[in-house]
Image 1: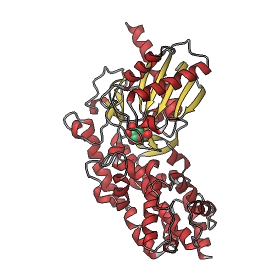
Image 2 (image 1 turned 180 degrees about the vertical axis):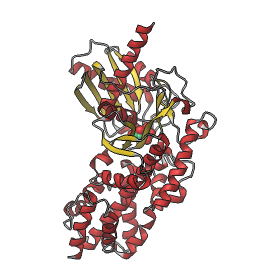
Image 3 (image 1 turned 90 degrees about the vertical axis):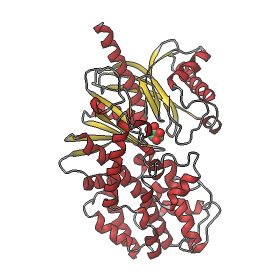
Image 4 (image 1 turned 135 degrees about the vertical axis):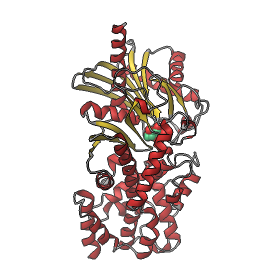
Length: 482
Ligand code: GLC
């Protein structure tokens, strides 16, 4: 009974009752087993810890922006060469490629004034290509593009294309991006150090059956910012909380020392932070848990993308699984009896965390199904409460770390009203992520700054088309001027 009553309160907490959140939280915590509560303490960051992280993050951003410190900086702060936001006058047909999220997609987008029409197709990237050679990867991308343009019957047009390539690129211009390193599940040979736009163009030339004009290469966070800015002119930050974690924001050109292009008149430039790498120099070690270290150790890029591994969807389920495994082996969960699947790396999917936290108060409907699927049918009611608590600790921490990063940007930008565009599977599908972030940013942020979080409608696809469209508009303007 007590569990049911407290679970009702808990559900409210995730929805609207932000002010009373902490009180409810305390009540809910009281039905979690004492030992589990104690052992999860290191997964909970108080505001002092978050403020400390914010200070270190700000210092990292400054180091990334300055020429002298950039080479050794972990948060790279790459200028994107996107200087202008869409102004609604963009028109025409555009192609877009979106590589680096949950799916690889090819898109055809038609813009006219407020109108936006989009057709897209998802293609699989098999694991052997994700870990194969660069040439194979780009041949595969070119093949998917060729299939798509033929299906859409635009193979005879030379359409402008925006390429969303969601990995760290050192950009030398809007259409030149040198891959700094692979992240997430990719590790193709012979791409690091090369220009990915050139590799795409070469693959297309090798085929000879399609014609495109690559107008821009961009990060998914930039696409997110652009797609939200198209609808809301206060949008100045783009954030991804999906398979990976990253962000970008509008910076003054004078602060972006690496930016060496001609000013197109805005005085601004979008900075791709590559903030997933925050912590790679050990500066977050004081806050990392044994689960973080274990996840990192078994990843394909140990020691890299430390903050990303604490926040993003590629790792969240595994963080939870490691805690569940440990507590079971210590006899604190499931009567000490685990299962092969529970002990299998990667087998507790991130979507389980969202599903478990979506359960109605006291019912545990989704959780029962998940635990059954994992061979844990013998779980007790107390186990359900404990498992949910562990999921919450991990997802709340992710939301809080993302909030600390956003607040740091809000303070740095010094604008009075900022909308933050956000995309990514974790943010989109976790039932309480937005509320958790709203609540935490409100706590951490200077109250004189007004902010809002806006879910991006397909930032990677739509954003790529918009960047291509803005670039096409600027090119035309420049041609007219000469
Ligand atoms: C990784 C990539 C970054 C991307 C993010 C989200 O952190 O390095 O470029 O934006 O994932 O997809």
